[in-house]
Length: 185
Image (cartoon, rainbow, N blue to C red; front, side, top):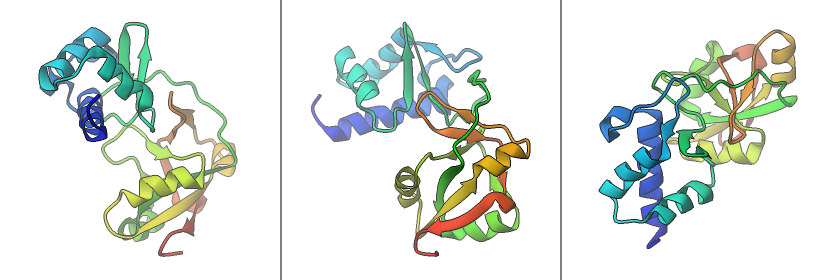
């Protein structure tokens, strides 16, 4: 593949197509978000001057492991805004999980809860380092939130873990959140 910039463009296009607008890419996701790999490949090849091997490299080398390729099917691991059921089983989370967000959002989260917004779930990181990577991509200053996942789970909240290790839940009430790191802590 020619450049890392091209890999990033392809990854962003695939994420957009598989998570938010499959119809714009001429794709039809099944109920669990899967699409035939050949359909996605055709769409990518029509848009970018790359080979199938290049597409596979984008999938395999993606640092966030955004895509799950299983046999002749592919889907985004999580983060959908279109209706899909990833068919994930409930899982017991580690005692602590983390979320990176903008400092600007903290007061609203603190007075209410951490919401999934337009996505199916709130995305939580298993470690501070990953949450910081997410947080630094936000606009402006950021904050890292620590989630008392053990207490939340004991209180009856469900957690799921996606194919790429991102922890998911419907919402995080403020009583389970603590500011941990970032410019505001």
